[in-house]
Amino acid sequence: MQTAINTDNFVLTVMETLMNSMDMWAEQERLNQVKAALYMNLMDKTILADDYNSRQLPTEYVDDTPRVVEMWLRCMQLEKRTAGTIENYRGELRNFFEWCRKHYADITTNDVRAYLSWRQIVKHNSDTTINNKYHALQSFYRWIMSEDLIEDGGSLARKPKKNPMDKINKVKTEKKMRTVLTDEQAEIIRCDCQTVRDRAVVEVLIATGMRVSELVGLDLNDIDIRAGKCIIYGKGRKERPAFFTPRALVHLEEYLTERRQITDCDPALFLNFRRKGGIYTRLSDDSIRHMLNAIVESDKRLTGLNLHPHMFRAYLATYMSRHGASIKDIQRILGHSNINTTSECYIIDDDESMKQVHELFAA
Image (cartoon, rainbow, N blue to C red; front, side):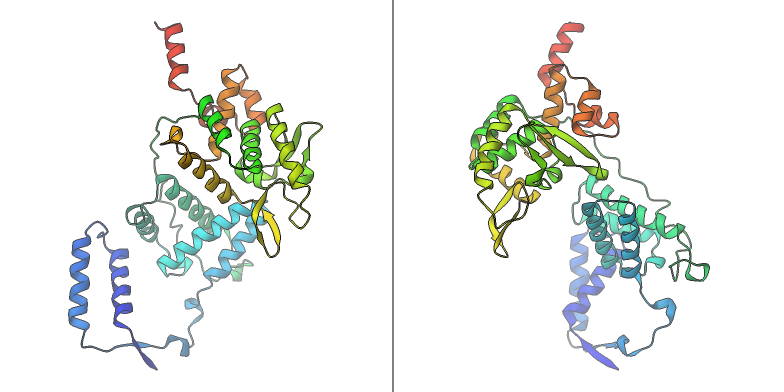
């Protein structure tokens, strides 16, 4: 059985195929010429396609990619990967296979290279984003190559002849001079908070240096005001205490006065102001980013500042370092497994600090 295909859809499919198989991403004028030629030659033609749904496909052509992906994600759950990591992996693989339109066992090294190039050149993904996609594909195919076929007691109907990720390398990211919040900027951000809740969020981030995912995951019962601390459930399912400064306690207690009056809500510490399903729900990390962006836009003194929640983490680490804390102490506060992560990624020397060191030892 055959059915007619819309010419626009056919041309779009052909163009996508050309972009996937040829190095033409940067030649937009050439692509437009090809598109025009296709329309010119197809305008008086009827395009027919076979109805593949009416055919019985051989076993080797049945695409069980979605099933295999979900099986791999369940293995990730058994390894105690976080829900956020698993969801990110699921999204990355869905995007990859929707783009390739091939069975996982038929993916080649060139398919991966073409996809990553397309994401980089056409979609303008950053080097860090490209490396995140690389890690997802690398992890998936490492598992695929180690898993057995069904006839050998495994769960795979087919496997690639060789790992398509073997010859793919990470992108070398450019190392730029990083900036850290100044004490003046931190004070401006505090003063520009519009609500009691927003001020409490900022103060907790500054005082504890916790990740935004850890902040939104806090429940009301995780807070111990008398002891001036809370319990954080961090990366790798690690649990650690975080301590509040006196300033943070003042604004947190002010927020808790309002929070404890709300009963029709999630057990979350920080709530969204909008109801969902008739109740107040947990504040999301996107809501916090939106709040911080609004603060920057509202104050000219913060113009040009790319403010995001992780900056408070680096600010705390750098602040503690300036005031004499050891790297080991800062590592414990931030909850890092590797002390190199603390020293390389979070303790940032500003120009003034480097100038003082230069004047002291080199001048």
